[in-house]
Length: 196
Image 1 (cartoon, rainbow, N blue to C red):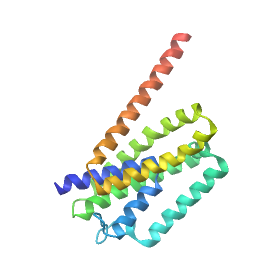
Image 2: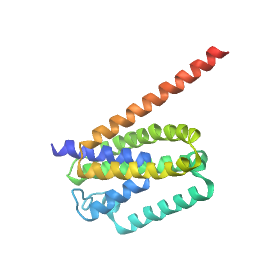
Image 3: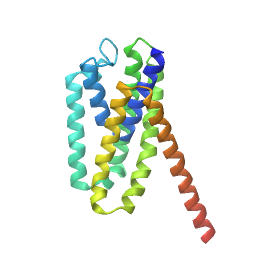
Image 4: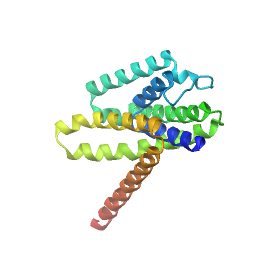
């Protein structure tokens, strides 16, 4: 049962990191620092709860907010910055999942693989959705989309640690979003081919 709960926690944290990378790492690190149902201490992933690491993550998050404000959210989601944020999310997701498994003495390397997959799922499910929504809404809603993403990542990470089985719903929902988004893209291109 413990392994199942740790897998749920790791998958949820990784998926949340795929949605937005920094806040889930902060949530997990602070809760681990407080020993609140998760603890990376005495593992190879103890740095995830060290104050210096949490400060680096917080500074990176603030820098991302500043860059987003200066260049716009759409600029952050495309090009080199978008790729960098996606990779950071995947790396953090892998580390959080592995650290969660190591917390109770389980082999950590499957968490690196599973975490990378769950974080990639979070990224590839949410990013196209946000891009589609951004193209259809007014400026007021467009400006709030990043806040919605941050809230989703925060809530996903917090629930993954405090109520681990909820992560199954999160990962399932993200998979459904990704499959639905790809189906819509396929239908759009099929429609364009018919118009030719």
